[in-house]
Length: 105
Ligand code: HEC
Picture 1 (cartoon, rainbow, N blue to C red):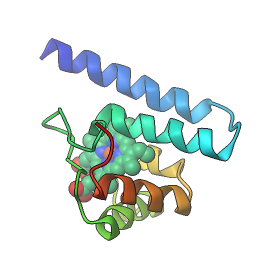
Picture 2: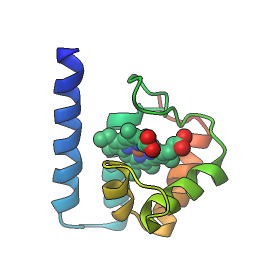
Picture 3: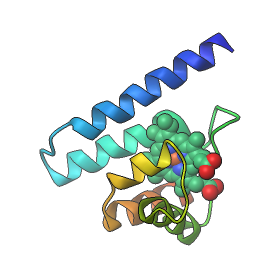
Picture 4: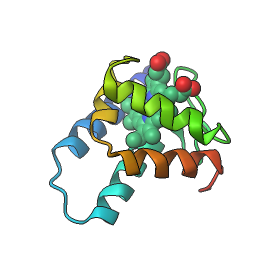
């Protein structure tokens, strides 16, 4: 249990750090955001943490709908609400596609 608390602290600071990083280029920004998702949801979207849902092979429309819901405030979570606020419509669609295809390693 001790290790998982350390992980959470690390992940939360990653979120806060990414939120304050200035945007350099569109592509780099997307990769940084995606790396942040992977820190919690796993490289391929297969989560290593029982408290974090799997995204791998999940329906792309479902994933982008959830991200939109977090951003609009229709669905709330102390982490995902902050994360979704950083995403553009295009980011959400690209991330939904990425995880629905089970890419990465
Ligand atoms: C600090 C950890 C953390 C980070 C970073 C994070 N997530 Fe999440 N995510 C969660 C947790 C925890 C939940 C479950 C929220 C809930 O219970 O409603 C979740 C839920 C979700 C869901 C809804 C899944 C479902 O089955 O309904 C999606 C989609 C999602 N995250 C996508 C992303 C994307 C895309 C990123 C990167 C931009 C990201 N997350 C970054 C922790 C994180």
